[in-house]
Length: 125
Image (cartoon, rainbow, N blue to C red):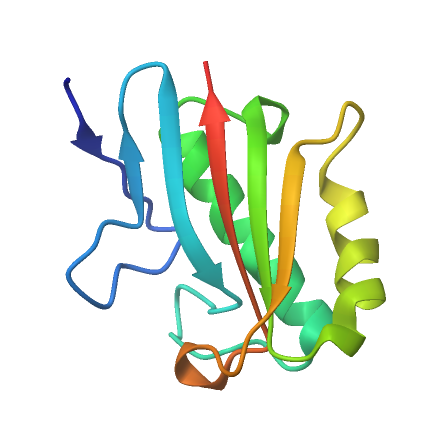
């Protein structure tokens, strides 16, 4: 199997021993993206803003791989507080159109850097 790292100046760099995005040919895997502004490295303020930034980071990585949100087939949404589900869902619906990707959503004990939401995606060519 051939795989290559995908990066974008419009998305944060990986902060550990992982790649932000891997192109495996017919499938592209985008690691969980926090709502980090790629230029400042700071989290956006509030859950809606973090969700928008997380999705923008995903969009930038997809674009770098030659794809769009329409190529996304599966996402996983991680929330620090399940009570933010409706707010994040509203932001999510602004980015994805029918047929929507398959999705899982989990409340977790904590996210890196004190994030409120993290979203990962799998896209297909």
